[in-house]
Amino acid sequence: MVAERPVVIFSRSSCDICHSIKTLICNFGANPDVYELDEMPRGRGREIERALSGIGCNPAVPVVFIGGQLAGGSKEVFTLHLNRSLRPMLQRAGALWV
Image 1: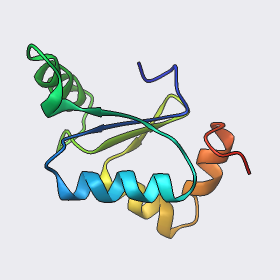
Image 2: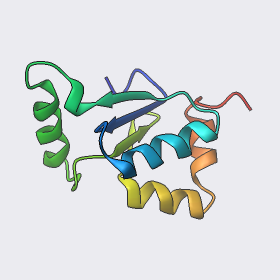
Image 3: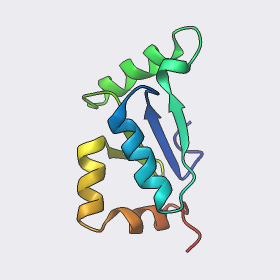
Image 4: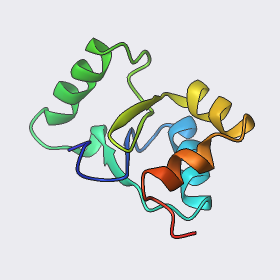
């Protein structure tokens, strides 16, 4: 799921900070795979949320993977952006055309 795409975001459709993270990454021109955990059928979202918590993601959403590697939650992704490290990460992962 994560290793197959340049950018993967685990989110909740009602989460404002999740929306901000998705907007930030899309504004770079990336087209992330977004998994809205609250919209997944048959408890699959809760299962993924537990797995994300199990690898240290607290809170469990939003969580961003870039190039198959955990970039982090909102705090880490915004820090990468402010440090001007996010765009190069997206480029190395093949998420940007430029």
